[in-house]
Image 1 (cartoon, rainbow, N blue to C red):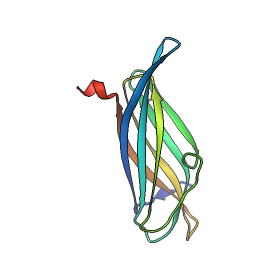
Image 2: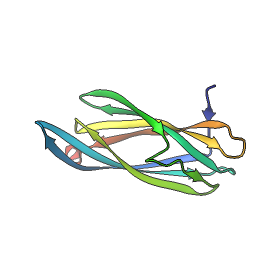
Image 3: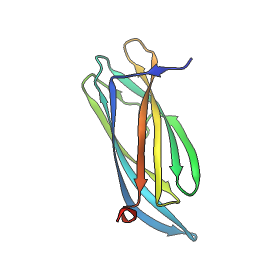
Image 4: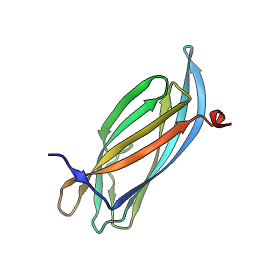
Length: 128
C-alpha cells in the first residue's frame, strides 16, 4: 500500500553552515538544519519515520531512512508544531536535502506522507 500525501501539515526548514574540519586528509563540512512540523489539520498526527535523499555536489547522492526523528516519534496535536534540529556532514561545500516523513493520522490510524521540500546546504563563505 502506498500512503497518500497529507495536505494539512507544513514543513519549515532553516539550514545553516556550522564549520569545516580536516580529518585523515579529508575536509568535512558540517551543516545544521532546524525543521518545524506544523499540524494545521483537525487530528493529531504521529511522525513514524523519515526518508532523506542527500545530495553532496561532488560525491553524489545517498539515502538515509529510519524510524522517527532524532530518536522520537512525536505526536503533534491539531494547531500545534514540533521543532527539532539535526546535522548533515558533507564532503563538498555545497549540497542539498529533500525527503518525506511517514506519519499516522491518530484518528483513523492510516499512514500518510508529508513531503520535506528540497533545501540547500551551502558553506557560508561560498556565497561571498
